[in-house]
Length: 318
Image (cartoon, rainbow, N blue to C red; front, side, top):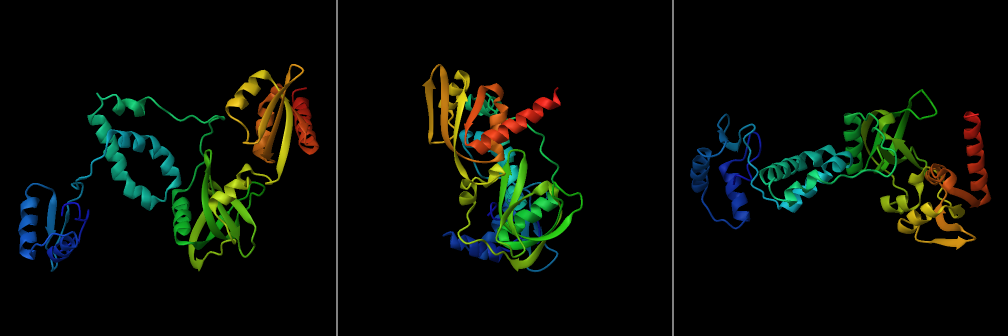
């Protein structure tokens, strides 16, 4: 019964609790429920709301108890993933999980002498790229976007694109919410156009849910969209990358390949990399980040693009 009682008024009546108990297999009278509630109120922070009939029972503010129990390993897992989940889950879901997060922290604090309980203090996730400070996201806008995704409803947004300082009113059909590094993106179509576009959440100045259902592109799934290479901020065109690489980079790529279809061959004291990848901005950023450790051989358009970028960069330092 204590688990069932709500956190605030007007509360549940004895009759409602009796019906619920019967659904759980407990055959009791309404009078028994009333007596038990009175007895429990002497040991726990529950109260009877007698402002209206029938009377309802609920927890007093700040007095609700969590009667669930979790293992130490579960507590460690919850503590470690809380920061990641907070960026991905809707506010309503996070609210429901907050007691579990707090329970996990309390559990670990109470068992800090156990080795496993100290595991959360010993491990951290660090991105392999430069760690960027997340952009400032309007919490209300994010919550609205999440709710529209949950209900499959269209959104009216005020959006400022990177190439324009003037915000535009847009009607979008939200499809997915994807966290790319430090930045959350809304995947959506606009108006009646089938093209799938990305909208950075921090560039949405205002968002309002409509009562119109979204029109999703045929066969669209979040996994299929990611597999297309779209989050690489470029075309999804597959290419076969060939490049000379250093010994150090060859060792690194042998351990963490660019793709499943990758080969590294030793030729004349050098290493030839061959890999099937998607042509994207992210690929070009990665190539440029290798500096003198990687020289693109083909495809020609990629080699020419890298040469042009490096030439411009060199001119900046002249």
